[in-house]
Image 1 (cartoon, rainbow, N blue to C red):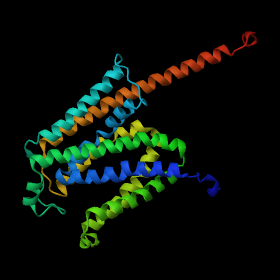
Image 2 (image 1 turned 120 degrees about the vertical axis):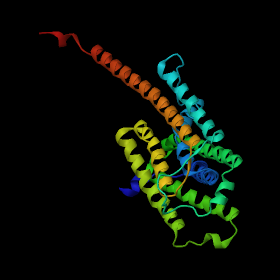
Image 3 (image 1 turned 180 degrees about the horizontal axis):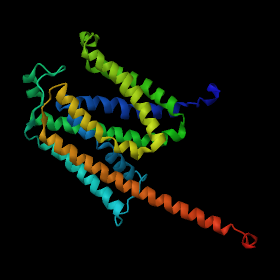
Length: 298
């Protein structure tokens, strides 16, 4: 039974999955890590709220989504994209005063604040925000292309495993090209090893499985509506565990992006409900037409 369920993988399809992994996993995650280096975990979590909005915009350009400008859901979608763009601009251009943590003891806090201050300059902050947006755009493009690839290769578990292997090979080659110091490749019993293990087992393994399970049970809209929770959890963990001083601009930009996300999701859900109700009414009309005259005889 297991061998029969395995889908055949041609060379052309393997090349598509390889390029798909290169765009959405290897390129996206490496650029995202570069953006985190110049900004902060809070900014990275806030910008992640733009993924559903960017995905909708790319799907609209590729003809996979429709937009009715004269309807209320269509106006809500356009307004959500605009609000999300305003949030990105706010995070990139406005820093504002820093919100200090409520507690002074931070178990994983940074010791070298001087280097962090030079690294998080205004120029690097804008560069980091642009890198985060680029990474999320690549991730959104990966989501849009995944729908087409799953039609050719419907086995989701095998598809994920193959992409993970391709991405591991690609990431190894990228690391080999950019990091020539052999000492940096050594794993030590410190927070770096814990972070690698956490990202590998929890983020990639458990999180991806739970997301697939949530989409299967409640749909993608329900999963997307829970995205802003990551911003709240990241701000709390960054403040209490790392002692990170959160800029006011990041908080305001995150709020705008959450608002834009919910605006797009509201318009999307209204259109889906309207489409579902119209399908049900059409089905009822077809059933009424199929009723013969003998059905009305007493």
